[in-house]
Image 1 (cartoon, rainbow, N blue to C red):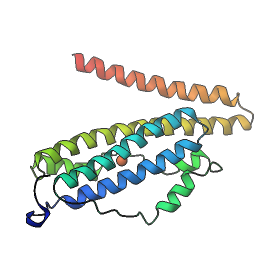
Image 2 (image 1 turned 90 degrees about the horizontal axis):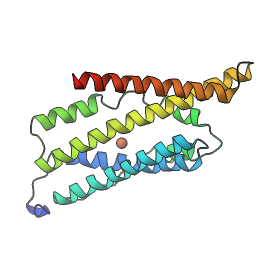
Image 3 (image 1 turned 90 degrees about the vertical axis):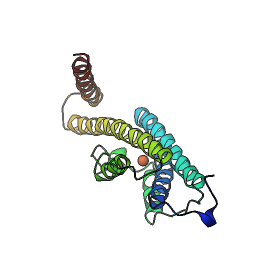
Length: 197
Ligand SMILES: [Fe+2]
């Protein structure tokens, strides 16, 4: 504890920490529920990894709020039940669940704004550290999800093509994922080469 609530001045970023904790805890529940019903083992694996991170972010920011001398205010997402019902329903395809899920790299205005505030020294040092770690994990989670979502889309596209008389659906899906994998590998190699110059 860094002080007594009665004598403490509320940091103006307490609301941000509260929002992050609630949103991350909820996301952990949604993604785990989806992992439990998907028939796609790769997708399930990524969903569980990201869900574990989300739960951890929820806990850590709740703890940070307590360390600052305050308590998390639990908020219920008004659309949470609907989101959970859809993701936990095995009759709804993974493709439908992915739908128009954010395709950005998670590094939009939200993180940009937090990064700027970190640089300007708006947070206490411990909170700034946590936020930096959190942003790094969120960006990595976003990248992992995008990759596996792309594979699900490719596989669904290949199946559709095959049902209209193309090559075998499985062969197409495997090729699609391998091509995506090679493209990623090529990019990583390019980066490595650049970094070693
Ligand atoms: Fe998150």
